[in-house]
Amino acid sequence: MFVLTVTVVGAVLHHDAGTAGAAGPADGHAVPVGAERSTDPDRPAPSLVHRVETDDPVVFVTIDDGNHASKEALDIVREHDMPVSLFLNEGPVALHGSYFDEYIALGNHVHSHTLTHAQLTTLDADRQEREICGMVDVLDERYGSTDHVGDLFRAPYGASDATTKKAARRCGLGAIVHWTAVAENGEVAYAAGTGFKPGDIVLAHFTDSLPQDLRAIRQLAADAGLTIARLEDYL
Image 1 (cartoon, rainbow, N blue to C red):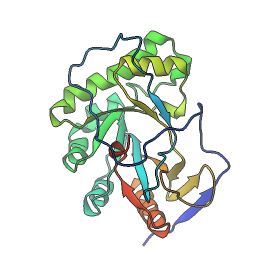
Image 2: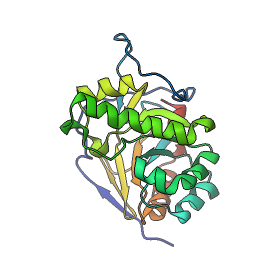
Image 3: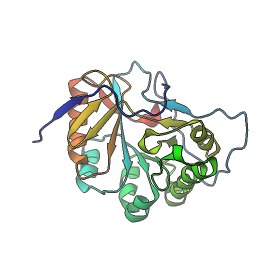
């Protein structure tokens, strides 16, 4: 048993504007292991995604950082075959690399969340690229053989700018993913409205409350008649 609290807020942290997405499932993408940085000026900038534009009755779960390796959370993901997308930093991968192997074995993807969880908008272009591409390299080295290193990116704190888009493009990344709801301490806060809507992207973190957060997300999605789907199938 757990106590579920729903919080409605006027805005969930967004430091940049824009919505992008797909109407339905698409082939997942992965960054080729050892891929060279793109210098093609015609390569499109990554799209900025707050929610997926879809009529499918689905929501998406993303989990950031990786600092707390919760066995209970992994058990919930495994038991319910829950698709999740992991946005990781270098330190947690070094400490808990085999833990994230377990998520990958369940079909989930890992993505760059920068090396050090830096606030990118305070950095120049070279340092932004080092943070973003460097984490892609870490993931490629550790997990590249699994073909589950994805081409999505999440900026720490949701803070991104035009320089971030250029750096992500050079790193071969296809989308910068924000969110429309946050799950924390067993509570869910929405950017707008009072519940999940199709295409919502939920932000959670690898903290000691992650098991409660995952249970809350599952219950609220079910209450709304929605299924948790794999984000990489839509972006």
